[in-house]
Length: 311
View 1 (cartoon, rainbow, N blue to C red):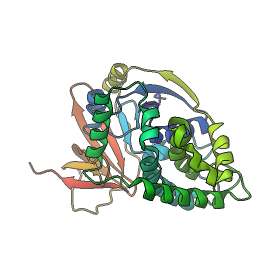
View 2 (view 1 turned 90 degrees about the vertical axis):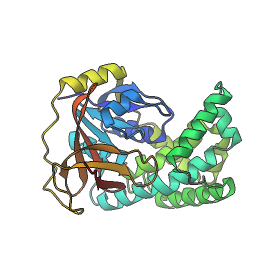
View 3 (view 1 turned 60 degrees about the vertical axis):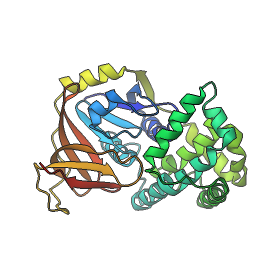
View 4 (view 1 turned 30 degrees about the vertical axis):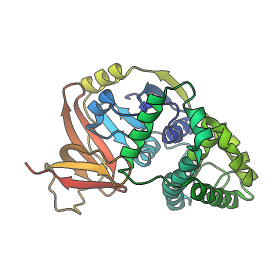
């Protein structure tokens, strides 16, 4: 069975979500560190343009977005599950809320001057400016939430999480679910990467206790791998067969067409390729790259757009 290769960097909140899911499932994986900002030439050789973190590689199959990566890991290792009985729909709804509303408020709050000083300790002014410009480009020019608004929203989200935790160890019951890993990662950044800002967590003591339980799950067993070796693995592998369900046409675009897939909002760089599959839950594109060879790049349908590329 092909190795799990995670392309990420240590400070990435969304990568922390997947690292913990790997730990929850007791999986071994290879760790490829990627740059925090563009350019990311060795990553985009695999993805064709998608630049957000993390990306999961299994041989010549490339999986983008943590919602899809979580599903792939659930299929790979069904036990222990991310969806304890009766929680699947609720967990996905909570995860979507956490990955969007909670994350947005938390990061706007975290990146105030005291938090920035900790994240970029030792960095030059030029490096900080490059990061700020990169994230502004990812937002497409949309303004970041004002600090006061972010603090108010963040506190409300924390109280809601505390309400969910009342009388139980995890958000949806006695066992961790997808909801826990999604809700944890923005708070992890506050506590672990911007501890000067972590006083806000005191509004929800139940949340702090829950965070300790999630943190104790760990990251599984990781071994380092170079980006160049990951590309060689892709070149030497054959993409897996497509078994995700029948074609579901919502766009009037035939399989075999040249298309572009992009995130709807944040980090909207498109990936172009041949449309191999459009199932109920995902898109799959075939791409040829001089460094990566023939790869299949997979995206979830939710949160992504599909457009035909004119010849």
